[in-house]
Image (cartoon, rainbow over all chains, first blue to last red; front, side, top):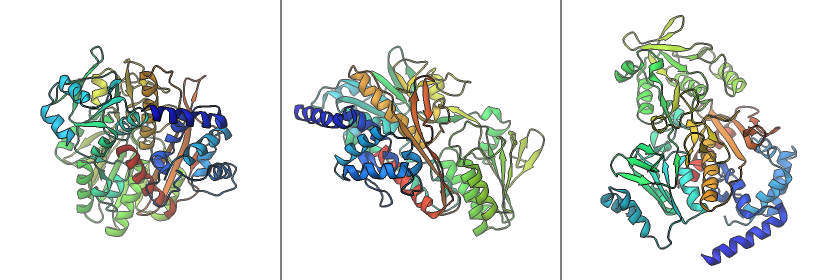
Length: 100
Length: 418
């Protein structure tokens, strides 16, 4: 348990570099995505992008492309518009740090 | 195995406490969750995921979970009950203790929940995700007609879903299926219009002389209106007749008619959805604060504005502005509550959460449409509001959105129940 606390604290410190908020906040921000992308970004069906373990830069750039209308989508262009750059970076960092 | 043993020996709060002591790490606190649907099951799971030192007991009276989302496909014969039925005992892998029993009363002063069979359970914090119950009394003759099997709501998935499917299958070709919709707010805003669409699709295939008559208490189609209306005119012209401003005030099972304020309308199958409110348990517990119907909550924590240390989720809540009573919202309410409860039990100040709604509807056996929104805490307004510029509906109906609808359902079932 001690080890886990230490690991969580380390992850929090890493993530806070990019967002100014602890990993716990990114984890909670990411939880909303689970209704379509699966718990912790582990996709349940083949129709959906598995976010867990994708490269951080890829998630962030695709979210911005959806948001700015550069990448066509059925839904993500409308969802992405609800997120700031800082939030997108935090989500990207969090999902990329998880195994599929 | 553990659960069955636990049920065998339980019968008191003491037994629950003893079961808690069997784990190696001492628990910080016990949270009891009432209701194993999209709200309650998700809350139980996420509290354990985010702090495994909190004891979580989930109380659910039904043996299995039957999904309201996609249940309209079952009515139309495009899916089976098995497709929308899931278990909740898989939550035990997170250390959630699942108790199949009914919560019959809440005592907020003693902080206990009384169960139908297993005595009383104490809690530090209580999550109530009770769903809805119907205001049958607002429609004269409804309960009598329902007992006689002459009218159904099928607005809770289960026995009535199967009964309505049977009635639609047995209806003569050339018959009229009447669908009556209550004034908003009600559970699942696009649900009735989806139901009209997929039943019309079934009629077109199987009994093409039949009609769908929609009697809507609202002035117009109140969700995804242009998308539904386009599908109706392009796919179901002459099959669906829509009447707005048509509020049902009574039902007569003998003459098989629905009484509106100004006229009676006859049908072969009567599917009247009565107005509803937060479920009976919420009423008994004093959680209902608004119009005798809904439970007002603090949207930073989902804590009841009426009863301390009790969090209310899902359709039972007094919805925030532009927030639908949907499965996606209930699941996300649960995440707000889980985060707040973990913070509160660890002596931290809860922080507001940004959440997402996405609701798919079928307009045929395979084509879907969708509405989405992102909601965030607004300090000035003291509630969750839709983020400006975000959200919207599908550009057009499509098979792609239909496939996404199934994917969404399988995913949210897994996120909530396993």
